[in-house]
Amino acid sequence: MIFKPLLKLAANGLLLAGLLAGGQAGAVNLTVTHWADGMYGAPFAVAMEKGFFKDAGIDVTGFITSQGGGTTVRNAMASDIPYGEVALSAAIAAIKQGVKLTIVHGGVLSLADNVWVAMKDSPLSSIQDLKGKRLGYSSPKSVTDMVSTIALTNRGMLDSVERKTVGSLSSAYTALREGGVDVIYMTEPVLSREKDNIKIVFRSQDEIPHMTQTVGVVRSDYLKKNPKVIQSIIEGRRKGVEYLMKHPDEAGDILARQYKMDPKITKSAINDILSAKGTYWSTGKLDYEGMDGMLKGLVLVKAVEAGPFDWAAIVDESLLPADQRSKK
Image 1 (cartoon, rainbow, N blue to C red):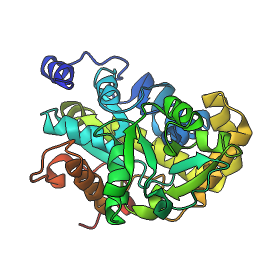
Image 2: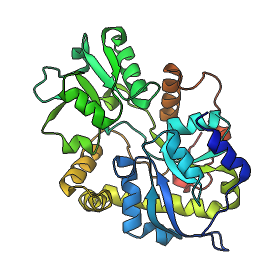
Image 3: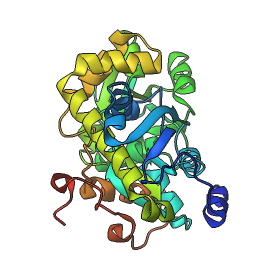
Image 4: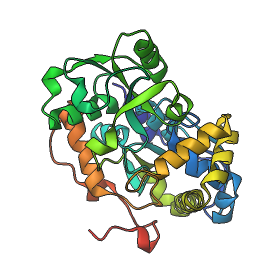
């Protein structure tokens, strides 16, 4: 089972290093899904470089990453501080497998970075144009499977579009260029890098306005013993989001240094996201409507079994600032 290593770690307990007597953490690495190739890490990059984590009482010196999913959750659980900003879909799957995780803050609350593209000279220009065409998504039960399923179902087009698995974004792009599919998923910052070579056919956010992508999670036993450490992470990240929103160009430069990318690409990616409707980077607040949207989508593609899912049992908002807590 994919989450069996997580259960073993939780059962054995980890020896947590770098903790001071006052509950603050020394130099640590944090787990962030798709660090260096996705936009989820932007607030963390800003918070680290601007010293916001240190100001909050934790010395973050780097990040642990993966290509998402259960791997990111496992990385988080194996860290000195078993915290991570991970895909909500992976967190739900882990929780349903029995892993004792607690959701402590909102991460990315929309699909503003997720689009479906064709080659520049393609005649396709809208989701309605996909009838009889071939759409490439990453893998069965993935977020791209779920998003494309929901979008096409809502349009009454699911049976009229051939959907094909195309793997990672790089292999998907190869399939598009070679004519294996007509449309593929693409995310920032790759979208900004390739904007002269492709055209956007439709934006996921336009078809699914409310869907939470990531959340901050902590191993539940660690949270009970070390709330101040997690509160410091939440506070540093919040300041990172606020600074990014006020200084997008500087944030683009910071992200370029951390991701080792051309600043033009990172600045374009940030501005593209900020120009979209709604909230992308949460300062901590959870969007339960968006979380329900993700859960329903996972059930739709049979990534998780249908059944009751009590957010109150797995969410702890007590470490959030008062203005970021839900009124539910």
